[in-house]
Every structure is written in C-alpha cells, then in structure tokens.
Image 1 (cartoon, helix red, strand yellow):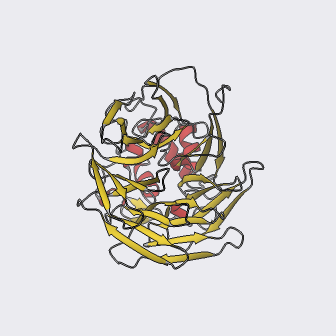
Image 2: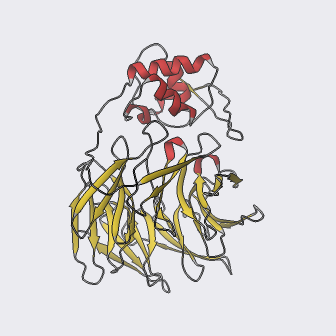
Image 3: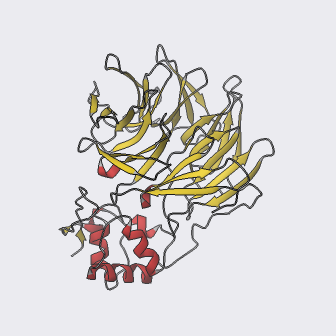
Length: 417
C-alpha cells in the first residue's frame, strides 16, 4: 500500500502520519524496489513524485542532506531505508545538465537557511532598514534576517495564507499575497500584527505577485483568476480588472520609472501595461505565439527585459516602438528562464529547467553570457522563482526546495565562493 505523510509544521520537527494515496493521485510511479512504499508515502505528503523523477540525482549522503531541509528524520530507521532506495534508483545524472558559460566576471554567494523545515522559502526582498524578508509559503510564515548578525525571526501569518510573495512599503511594512485564501495582507514588523484585506470578488481567488508604488498603492496579480488588482491602504479599497485575453495568467509585475505597472503573461505571448489611474490594459504582443513570460524588469533606458520561459530565451521590448529582440539562453529551449532582474543595465536571470539551477549574467552591450550553478549547501537543488536587487547593487535569490535565501555579491571583482 502506498502511503502519504502529513507534516506538523509548527516546529522544525515533522510527525509522520501514513495515509492511503501516493502515486494513485495520477502521478508517474516510482520504480519498484525495496523501500518504494515508504518513499512514495513520505515524499508525496508534501510534493509529487515528479520532484524526484526530474531531479539531477544524488549520492546517499547528498539525499540525506536534501531530506534534512524538508523533514527531520534523523535517528529513524525510515531515513536509512529512504536514502538507500533513492541513492540506488536516482543516482547523479546529467539529463538536465546546463551549458555553463565561463567568463571573467566573479560573484559570491552568501546564504541563510530558514529555521522551519519544508517552508519553501521564496521571493526575498530588502526592507528600508537593510533587513531581508522572504515568504515561507508552505508554512504560512514571513521571515526576516538581519544580514549583519544572521539573526532570523519567523512571523506567523494566518493559517491557509500560503503567501506566494512578500514585498515592502516605504515604512517597512511587509505586504504578502494570500495565494491560498484569496487575500492580501500587511505585517507590521514592530508588533507582529497583520491586517487582512479580502478580495471583493469570490472569483479573485489567488493573489500571486505584488509591488508597492511611490504613493503606497499595492499592485498585484492573480494568475489563475486572470486578474490584476489595486489596493489603496488608506481606504482598504480593492479594484480588480480581468485581463482582456482569456488565459493570460498574469504573473510577475514591475513598475516603470514613471510608476506604471507592467505585467508578465504566463499564459499568452504578451506583456501588459496598466494605466495607474483608469486600470485600462494595453496588450503588447510578442512575436512568437508560443511565448509565455514569467517575469520582467526595466533597464535605465525604459526598455523592458523579460524571460521567454517556454522557449528558452530572454527578450527586450521597446515600449515606445514595440520593437522586440530575443536571445537564446545558453542551455537552450528547455532551459526555462524564470526570474529576472536588471542591475546597472546588466541582465540577470536563472535557467530553472536545468539541474543545477543556473544563474546567468547577460551583458547587452557585448551580447555575451556568463553563468554559474546555484548552490544549496553542499548540493544543487532548487529553483529561483523571483530575484530582486539590494540597495548596494547585489542580488537576492533563493532555493525554495532547500529553504535557502541567498545574497549574490556582484559589486566587484572578488573571488567566487
């Protein structure tokens, strides 16, 4: 009998409760071998088996390290059986090996590990006081680290929030999107209290990504609901619009230098410009009809850089002329570029379809690439789903599979760690 695991997320320890289920949920089955039922039951309690099937594979010590970021099984007989099975059936492989591009530019990686296991840390952002915040989506947490001391504090969000992202306002308030319960919320770091804003339309079920403009207005996307929202904190008023094209799936959102919201379309070959007053949507169609876009960012000349996630490319749109230019990502059509940030007119993004996940630097002036594998402790396991710059010009990324948040030092020619 295949079995599932239910995790108690209130502490860093996990309690295993075996339930019927497993691969019967329509997932591709794991190979039959001793330990199969235990692995299927424990692992599918939090994620589908495709996370194992599509992994780059690990040795037994590496599987132990990866599991320790998700659930505490230390000292149990189950851990030995699970890791023996995984190491035998899923040893290291190069099926999704990236094409790493060497170069002269050097970076550093500085990482913090979230205390609560299995929280799927994501979307780090720098607050005005220099602290770094992220969402522990699966554990209903907002998390703060002081980079100077390494001190980490976790703030509980309402149960079922499943905050897909966090962002900050000018006062240091932490806004979060209630992807699991159809809400927007603001956390006051001084008191730990949250203010919750419910969607005025029951069809607006999944707030996704958010950003705060210079007036304090919060703009957010609702991917599955095909909507874009505007929240005015002073009144609590929320306005919602539906994207003109069905299945647009509004995803990433950024503000231009003029404070105009732009949205990436994860379900159509479009970028959307939102009038900040009327909320009228202008659709900019990208040339390849198979294009879908996860995220976007702006260069100093007002051009929009975006990831063509479905086709393995990055692109540039000139909003004034509508001209589009694209470049193939080094690892090819299956590289699935995901997050993107433009720092000093250098484009940074990741190839999430590769194992390991790859951080890529693209210099538009020379049209040259350079790339690095993104570490997760002593292994490579995770996906960057959002990246944002710091005030010092560094880059914040994460590895959601291993509860890690990483600051990439790109301020000068220092040795890579």
